[in-house]
Image 1 (cartoon, rainbow, N blue to C red):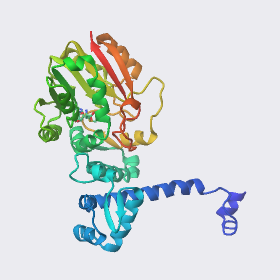
Image 2 (cartoon, protein in one colour; image 1 turned 90 degrees about the vertical axis):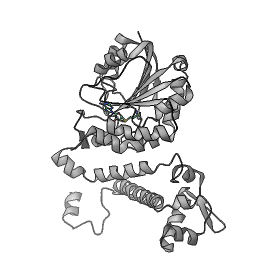
Image 3 (cartoon, rainbow, N blue to C red; image 1 turned 120 degrees about the vertical axis):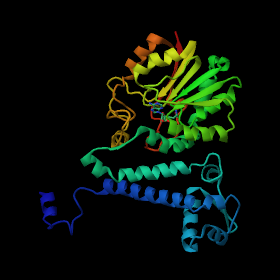
Image 4 (cartoon, protein in one colour; image 1 turned 60 degrees about the vertical axis):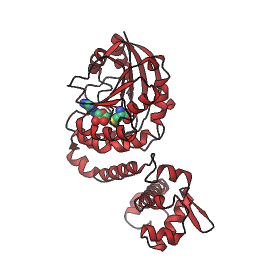
Length: 362
Ligand SMILES: C[S@@+](CC[C@H](N)C(=O)[O-])C[C@H]1O[C@@H](n2cnc3c(N)ncnc32)[C@H](O)[C@@H]1O
């Protein structure tokens, strides 16, 4: 009855709605505020604010260098101070520690590519209606990974890479290892880090040829002398042999038991297979409804996705995968995500509840 009256326009001008709009407005306000914060941060990044403020500057000096309007820049700087990305002292602005490390262009840990990836991701989401009506956008898998390679590397450098490398390098087999395959290694930073920790190790990054262009840049950037690349498709091509360790992290084949015999054959006797992936367990529902949608918004021409985040046709449950794995390997240990996970962005690349399975060839 109430709702009928409101819809007829009799009641709602004088009586507050019988159903409170508060939950709706709380969500809209969160969306509005965080999008605007993102725009301020990204704009400051693009205008070079954090490059300029590695040394203290007045507002006038900052505006001259960034060619900004002082009224706008004044407001932007005040917001950045509130957010903790700038410090203001005696009329001078300068980077806070976090912005100097993660937002300054010349910093080795700068996260610019992550911002760009996030922005492109938001643009993809603006197409949700079109995609929900007409189906996913199809792009080549190789192109997708080429485009995301740099941001995946930057994200990994924020903790997950170092934590993972520590877990693997503490294995007794790592210290003795001479040959390591980083299968679907992408940016190659894992392989590079492994060779820095074991001076006798020769590492091989296997990936699509176009993705390896960035890998080669990283090999030179980090002056890695014992890291090589192998171009190919691990589903169809030879992956080599005689490895002491195969490291397999976040790949379309990571939950596909068909690759287990191939990886087994590529290892020396007693060799170690390290599989770091997000698995779905038997009877498990969704890990994230938002990420399930995002996963299905883009189809890859190379390999067929299934409907949940990070899943593909031909994937098994965690339990089924372990069953097949145990036919070829003995499980040394399984490490849960809280020991190595990076920071979430509610975006592809999130660690979720990934596991590191360390298995020894039998
Ligand atoms: C999500 S990235 C993971 C990169 C890195 N291993 C990590 O954990 O950060 C997946 C990588 O697997 C590569 N890849 C996917 N399918 C592949 C295939 N069939 N053959 C070779 N590489 C593949 C992609 O090009 C990409 O570099």
